[in-house]
Image 1 (tube, rainbow, N blue to C red):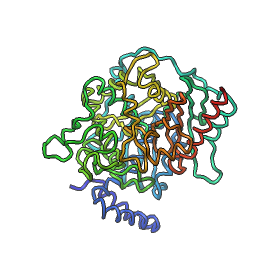
Image 2: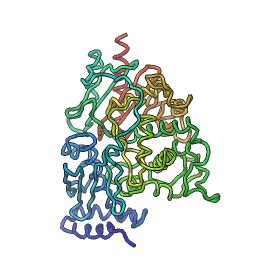
Image 3: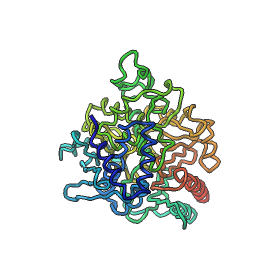
Image 4: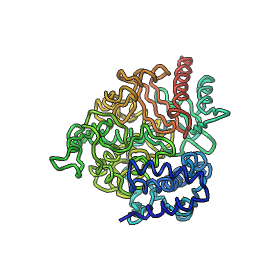
Length: 490
């Protein structure tokens, strides 16, 4: 039976006859997409823009406390391509929800579900998990000393101040960088930070695919506790039949993006065209993301091909939920008890889909200082500042070890990007200023938490940049200039 959005898509296309230029653009895109991905995927594509807008705007407003108009103009509108003039939104502060529509024909509603973040309410899957005080009763961990007081820490010298200035600089002609926060952590203390207007050291910011590195840590905890073997077949019920070609896929292969699954291609898609990418449709138009990820087939034998698809991490996130207790509440308490509290996260919200699976792909909102704390945790080999070992010995080196099939172009480890190993991407980043032993959590549009053991240094840079290669040139400059500035201190 056709989904309602299929009918809406047709009605919407017909209604655009008055705007021949926009209609012809969408018709061409739709025809091309339908030829390759089918009508169901095309119907999902119609929902992506409104669900993306409502979800992100809800999170920015109610999780991060950012100005919604500014966030929409900077972080949502530019991604909508030819649809940007047709999206309308309404923010209901009392109900803590955001409603969006596309030309009045395709609609979306996202709600704030307390500590579970924001979620799009899909018809028939209008899940809410927050139960009030019962969900605030999280186990307390030993207090971790703050990285700094509430005030912004000024750079330790003029050279570092200049490096931070460069990270926020904008070109007169564009594209815009929209840097929101930079934190420099040297020898375990903040030696300089800077924030955009409206952002403070406590403001949660979207980490996009930096979230994957947090998923790495949660897997490490399960390995430590003997609940998961990274080299045995992944516990995915849909793959349990002996003849299923996906059955041999291991958690290690999911984590290293070598599962061979034929999901979307997040490493190569960007801009408006992503509405036709299965990854994007999974993330914004599906109530149960892991059900979709578990249903897709293979395009390569496990371990043979590197392909950056978020389907891998959606499945890993479901494994975490299942092994942590099987529902959203149990997963949230596990994450807080085993990682966030002992490491010292203070302003972090990981969001969930309607099936209660944590969105360990791209939906962790955390302050820049939280991201710096996470980088320090990996810099210290998975040991907290209280001396408690959270990750198994050797896990950090395992995470930063190069995945060979990624060497030609990307230089990927296991949930982290790495400069270790002889990859073309690593050589390029090292030439740009990254230390050869460094590795990093990285996300779309210039989200970075760079760990540099040889320098005893962590640099966090967060924004929503539209510059090339996720603002890589600016980040390489920031790394070079920061190291030089700290060396000048002696």
